[in-house]
Length: 239
Image (cartoon, rainbow, N blue to C red):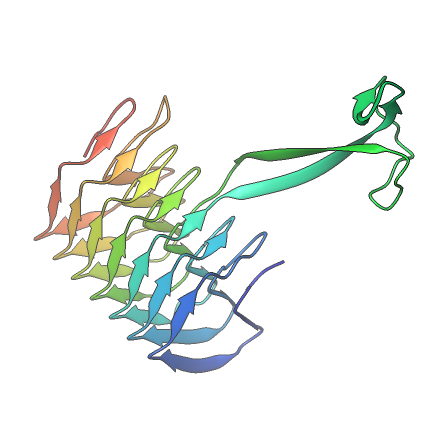
């Protein structure tokens, strides 16, 4: 499932203003909104407590004319969760306990089985606040706080061979497991980060890289007039 609150695809155009997205959940992309091959700009909006595997707040793909201005992203979580079930015959001494090997013919609607739920939350997940793969050309005057991503880009994940500008943004107390607690930039991006504060973010697993800012996979990041301070990582490049 993608775009839990809003979904745009195939050359949609429009603006979203003064909107509050909260508590939305998508299994894959875009807890707040999923934007693909469209021009959808978001202004003066709040995105809080949303959940998705990529882009818990906003997910953008091939949408380079879009922009995100004066928005707040708080407590959004990029986490990939899969749930499977195993079905067992009941123990004759206690029908609530399983016995033997799992039965591949069992089902959730069959009361003759004891069902064991298995939750896996260790899959790749990116972009707690925003996931942008050739996404918005401009992210400006936004605040990112206490967002998280299982893998990359607790605040923002940027990728693809474009040159987006992140300007006048505050990123604090965001977390990623692998890289870029504040911002993660990848895959030939020429991102520009101007007049931003990236502070007290973390990359927490071992190994992990770039508590504040991470840049890799032939990307080149231009940082101007910005503060990167007080970040931490589990291995290398704490700032």
